Amino acid sequence: MAIEEWKELENGDHGDLQNPLMPTQEEQQENGSLQMLYLSTFAAVCGSFQFGSCVGYSAPAQAAIREDLNLSLSEYSMFGSILTIGAMFGAVTSGRIADYIGRKGAMRMSAYFCIIGWIAIYLSEESLSLDIGRVLTGYGIGVFSYVVPIFIAEIAPKNLRGRLTTLNQLLIVTGSSVAFLLGTIVTWRTLALSGLIPCTTLLVVLFFVPESPRWLAKVGQEKEFLSALQRLRGKNADISAEAAQIQNYIETMQSLPKTKLVDLFQSRYIRPLIIGVGLMVFQQFGGINGIGFFASETFASAGPSAGKIGTIAYACIQVPITVGGVILMDKSGRRPLIMVSAAGTSLGCFLTGASFFLKNHGLLLEFVPVLVVVGVLIFIAFFSIGMGAVPWVIMSEIFPINVKGITGSIVVLVNWLGAWVVSFTFNFFMSWSSSGTFFIYSLISLMTILFVVKLVPETKGKTLEEIQASIDSQRDI
Figure 1 (cartoon, rainbow, N blue to C red):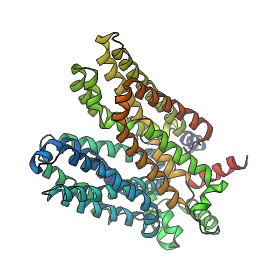
Figure 2: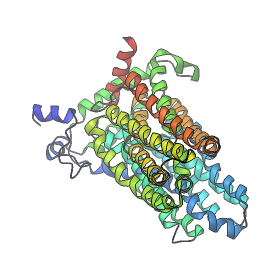
Figure 3: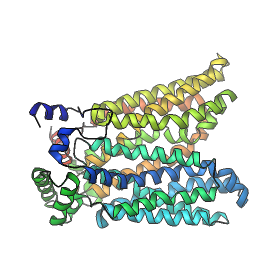
Figure 4: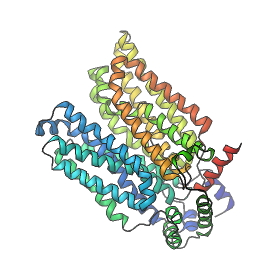
């Protein structure tokens, strides 16, 4: 590859956008075949699809489950919300599990939990077995939410890492949309059985893909490490430089004392931990789960004409916009993408808040339904393009491998805790002040921009080891 072409690649020029996930001809010649990389990524994002399926299951199944099992609204609300409780437990244990049994082992275990959970839901005749099944699937996706982006980040070359890691969010959105649409045409028990498909697919494909090379190097399996890296880069690729860089970094990390929870407050680790936790706080407290879970009610509260149109548009817009984020991830960089996304979510919340303000004061009532729909759609479009995916990408990139398990668990736990808090409090806030609720979310999105400007590094075009060196150098300034 010519020097000029390499510089273009480092600056984010990845060739023809008609095939945004495919390497250029020059990349293929340099790296060999990347088929195993794509197969490994496909296996991982089956877990992301499962994540989306679990989240999207409860809404279309609500009426039928309540009727068939004679459940009260409170009993079904418990069934729907207990997913996040299971996910929090999954988040707490995910890092240690992935460090102990490997990234593939953690994904296998998560799939087994989800399979058992779906079968329990399918066989349920009362609320207890429903809740048990929901907790088990919640635990599984709690682990998936950590290990999938970590695995993809550790297997991908630096020029493809952003786009491939963003597929995690794309498949979550796709899984949720598919569950929602499929739930309108099949029974709730059949919908539960459909949740077995991504799990079984993942289990089968994992037999044919290698473990994360960085994890193998970390646990001292040098022969397996080199073999896995060679398979991922292609049999004709020269992996010597990348292998040496990974091994040198691992040796440096392993020379450090064993990390305890209190050690995370050392200057070496506190900066990436603040970045990871901060991004998840801003992602969740910007209102995504409150707005997403109760979008239909929000549209309906603005006026009957907004309900159906808004709900259909909301369901249709997420997937194509998230695809746009996949294309832009390694083209524009992480920092610009998340700042543009946060600015857009702030605008969407402001417009929605303004519409409710007008409604409450009896002003321009004919424009209120349109303004609510436009505001929420702007919010979800800009969230899908950056705020949904970028925090997970950055989380998978910024932590040293010797603390990645414990720090990753903390970050994922914060994310799930935030999801529960926002979804639980949304209706209370709306009862207090519908316009004030969205104005608060708008302000939090603006604060996200300031946080990114001050603390978040650009990770595009850098290896995971180069990112650590960059964070360390900023700490020393």
